[in-house]
Image (cartoon, rainbow over all chains, first blue to last red):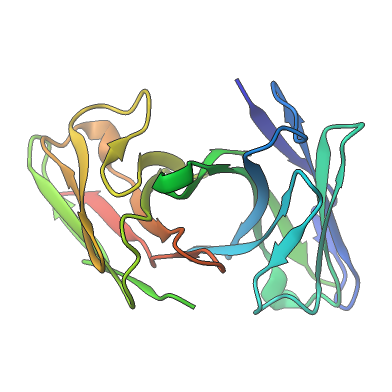
Amino acid sequence: QVQLQESGPGLVKPSQTLSLTCTVSGGSISTGGYYWSWIRQHPGKGLEWIGYIYYSGSTYYNPSLKSRVSISADTSKNQFSLKLSSVTAADTAVYYCARDYTGGPEGNWFDPWGQGTLVTVSS
Amino acid sequence: DIQMTQSPSSLSASVGDRVTITCRASQSISIYLNWYQQKPGKAPKLLIYAASSLQSGVPSRFSGSGSGTDFTLTISSLQPEDFAIYYCQQSYSTPRTFGQGTKLEIK
């Protein structure tokens, strides 16, 4: 079964770039029919979708973050990555990666998810 | 963006109770509505996709219904492990958006 695992620094300084990687096991990110998403959750708050990358390499970002976000993939390592630039304390959150399954006429859904990683923005 | 509004925001119930959580979309989203359960310190877990399809491995006491703008998640008989936060999420359009969550607590 597919499993996802986030990795990256847990502490980032303000104005710097947050960089996270999601390693996928049990399946290939190059398989058609799946998007690969990043989602974040501010402490004690709800869920915010950041964006996705498709197996073809195309991306879509939440307009609320679009100017600062970049998602890329390394198919040789079966990983996809998130970069968020010019971070502030408001970017402190748990960051999740998830497979965004395309169910055709049934829509899309996130399954499975990584365990999440807390990133704190602080000097 | 499509806004998703859940009600109630919190709910107290007892083991064995039947519970219903509502999710309303700001525009019609057909059946493109998913439900997730999140326990403290854990990632969300998919329960229901496409409004009413039960994800493999999820107990049958969970069910979903609705289409258009109004959706419900029902737990037919609460079990101790069901006390968690529940989120709805639309996949009708990007950006994908979530409801604010419903916290289900033990009475």
